[in-house]
Length: 300
Image (cartoon, rainbow, N blue to C red; front, side, top):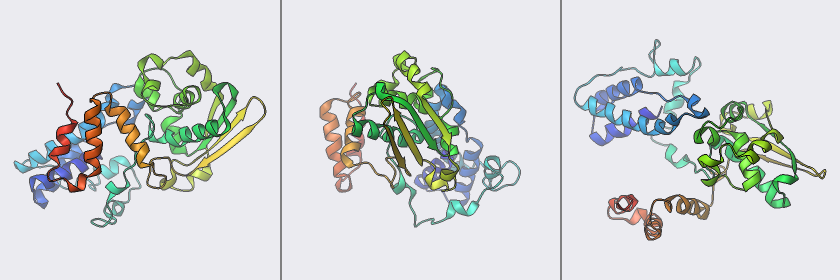
């Protein structure tokens, strides 16, 4: 559905009227794509977001020149977007709070370099190990009870088929957290994907869906309970209803900044990273946002 957001923004920036914007949506809908099956190792996963943005802008540019799209692309019964996605769609959900509720204020941040559906389990394991001074060798078994959504999305049998496969797999990510006490860039390096230590730890992890979490609804799709059993007989448990980084379980400003510095520092000099952080802190007071965008370009 990213093409529709991109088409909407591009249409607004181009000053298109209602009819032209509808045609932009109709064209964008015909170019919608991106299948989550790519998570099991395909490099095309990296293209999804950019391709959606490209298609939305392209659709708006075509509409400006009179190109027509499917006028009722969302709700048309045969071949429409809603019908293609679900037999039980709720159109009113799309427009609920329109002009009053801004979804951009609900955008989350990812503390780990994995799919968001794994973050609650990573935070739980990190917390249990840190609070009880556990190492990977102390752990006999990890049991995760989560939603059916998370099970299907990230708890599939891991095979070292590429970075994307590791980043979207709970068994790999939890093994990395147990052994490295981290799940960031280094843990998803190509050289680590078939690490014997990680592969050997995975059988200790057991993931099952919990109907009680499913019953909480979509807003609690990342809810889980983790039980860690140790070889010395001790056991620990932790439950979370929201993954870290969401509005219901936000990250601290310092943690967000630390992640930015870690990632940006790999492509920008330290001075530039510092300047970006300072500029963002006074973003609302800038005379021109180009002051920020100019800092984001790596020196050649």
